[in-house]
Length: 168
Image: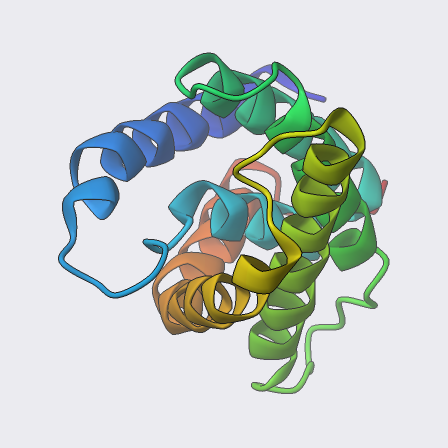
C-alpha cells in the first residue's frame, strides 16, 4: 500500500467515523441509522479488491468498536467479512450501474449477520433473533441509499491517487 493511498484511507475512514458519530447517529430515522463506515469499506473493496476491503474493514471496524459499548472486535470482524466478499466482485470499467447497489446490499446483510452471529455466540442480550429482521431491513435499506453518494466518490479518489491500481 503506497503512502498516498494510506493517507487517503486514513482520511476517509476518520471522516466517515466522525460523520457516523455526529450526524448519522442523530438522524431521526426509524430503526438503525445508516452505516456510513460500512458503505465506505464496501466502496474501497469494490475499487481495489478483497485485500483492501479486508484491511480497510478491519481498521475502520476496530476504530468503530472503540467508540461503542459492545465487545472489541465485533464490528471489525463483520467489516472484514463484508469487505472480503465485496472485493471478490469483479470490478470492470464497464460494470453495471446496479452492481454497487447489489454489492452494498449483500455486504450490509453479510456484516449485520456476522455481527449478530458473534453477539449470539457471546451471549449478548441485545442480540435477539426476533429483533434481527426489522433492524436488518431498515439498516440495509439506508446503506443502499448511501451507495450513489459514497461508492463513486471513493472510486474517483482511488483512481486519482493510484491511476493503475493492482487488484489485491
